[in-house]
Length: 225
Image (cartoon, rainbow, N blue to C red; front, side, top):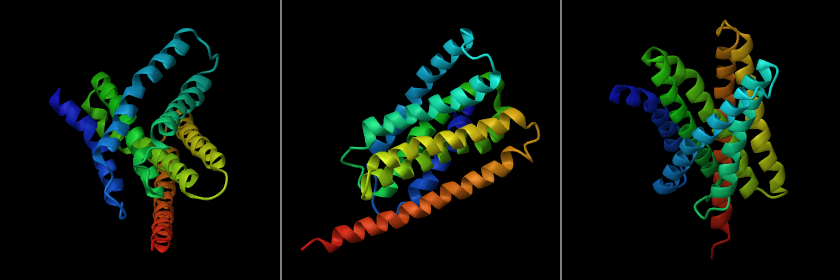
């Protein structure tokens, strides 16, 4: 059991450490980051319950609607809602790159519990592919969502536009990922190319968030007496 938990949690810790260590501007309060992780972990259970109820009641006639569309939308919506309610106006959300860390934390909390439940059911032989695909994809969905939360809070203009982009973009990426899993049995032609794109896109948002944070701190320092 201890080995299984270690294997299930290790990918999330490794991915979070990667994004955390790229933060060049401030030391994030570990308490809030941990809270984000817990929020994401707790989200797993109501989401799984809702998915189970919809499946048991045969709400959707097509498997694609249930497995791909509904699961993608509900997972990203609840993560977005947590960031909006608990993090967006928090005093410790101090620069655009913070959005990357908080978004990744919530997503990895969800992915970790989901990974534990999956490995308990199917065994450790699926651990490697789970780390490469679902866990890392959730982390990158969170990175993209968090980037747009950073834009909403720290760039001029209408923040509602960026908040809408945070939800819309993560949903589209998640739907695309689930669609490829649903339709392609050959990962070489389906999921793996998409994961390469997702890593490129996520790291591009990391770089853009760094530039926004650099500009943010420059503006703050320039107005100080």
